[in-house]
Image 1 (cartoon, rainbow, N blue to C red):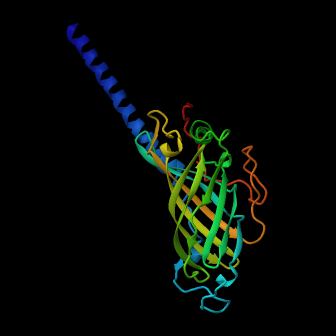
Image 2: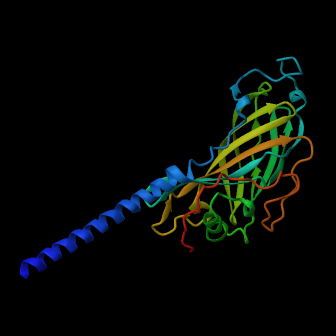
Image 3: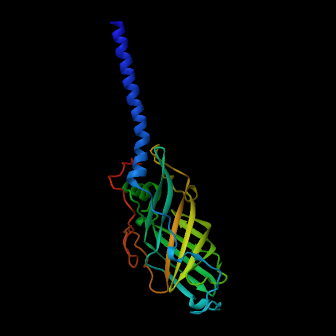
Length: 283
């Protein structure tokens, strides 16, 4: 009897150990499978149109000429944010030990810059934060509520405070690299930021690309981490791609949180998963 009881106890212990081992494997494997095989890769970083990514120091001049022009070859004036412009966030996440990237975007961007000769003399751009969406409804709920509180702080605005000297204007289709300094008002906090900017003249448009590193604590933004389920670094990236035109630009977006707005081309679609998303705890 004693030997039989001891055998049963050993068998039970082996079963318990086996169940525990399977649970550990599933805890690691499930997020890995979800991230790498089901959810797929995150959207690529915003970038200038690929067909225009040659770098050149050739000054821009009148049509058919490479000579510099004192009027910046007709680029003087106000350039408005137009259709095709995007803004959003990119944050590294760890989902139960597996690394992934959270991306949210919106086309609800408006504003303008003024170019005089080869100098950007002023600029101001705004983003409707309440319209930023990712591919996960649970992530969107966290972003809109606990993290960014878009009901109270629906808009983020950058205002240039120092002129940007472009030097010689790059040739049509070439990329110039500059530095911008201004104030970023977001989540009820206004701070000075300095960041790199890339720009290209593309016919009758100007494309501008910027990445701004955001330390969450500097803007009193709650760390996106959710307990031990999803953890993030203490910073993320604000990505902006502006398609500027001297024609009619996007109209200021309503603070109601609608994704659609006049002149913006409607809401952004972020690639979604092919199965129902993981359930993320609220709070």
